[in-house]
Amino acid sequence: MTRKGILFVISGPSGVGKGTIKEALLAKVNDMTLSISVTTRKPRTGEINGKDYFFVTSEEFTRKIDRNEFLEWAQVYSNLYGTPRNFVINELQKGHDVLLEIDIQGALQVKEKMPQGVYIFINPPSIKELANRLSSRGKDTLESISKRLAACEDEMKQVKYYNYLVVNDSVDEAVRNIKSIIIAERCKIENLNLR
Image: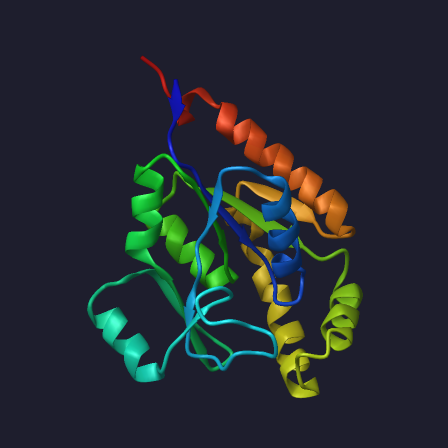
C-alpha cells in the first residue's frame, strides 16, 4: 500500500515563527520535501541561493509569471515571492509530501488551485509578543515592523480559510502539534492508494 503525496501549507503573519517551525519540523518528520520559493528580495545575511530561496531579478520574476511558472505569487512589502508550480506538482505525483512555508496571500492563492492541501495557520500568542519577536530578531527596520503589525490584524482574520490553527507559544509544542496533524493526514483513507 502506498500513499498519495500531500501538500502541507504552513502560513501566518510575518514574524510568527514560520521559518523556525519549518526548520524544526523538517528535522523531525521523515519523507517531507520542502518547496523553495522564488523571490526578488535581496538575501539576508547567511541566506543561500537555492537553499533558502531562489533569488531573481524583477525582470526574471515577471518572465516566470508570463510563462505561468508559479503555483502562486504575491507582492509582500515591495518584494515578489512565488512557488514553482512544476516542482510541487511533480513531487506530489511521485507520492512525496511537500511542505510550503509561505505568507497568507500566497497560501490563499494555492488553496484556490489545490483545495485538497492541508492548510495550517500559525498564530502568535498575542500581538504584543509578535511585536517583541519582530523587534528582537533584528532583521527589520522600525518602519517595516510597524507595517507588519498593522497588517497582522487583517491577516489573522484569514484563519477561517485554513484547516488547522497552531499557536506558536513554544516552538517545540507547535512542532509537536503540526507533526500530529501530518501523522493524522497521512493515515486518512483518502490519502492512501488502496487496492
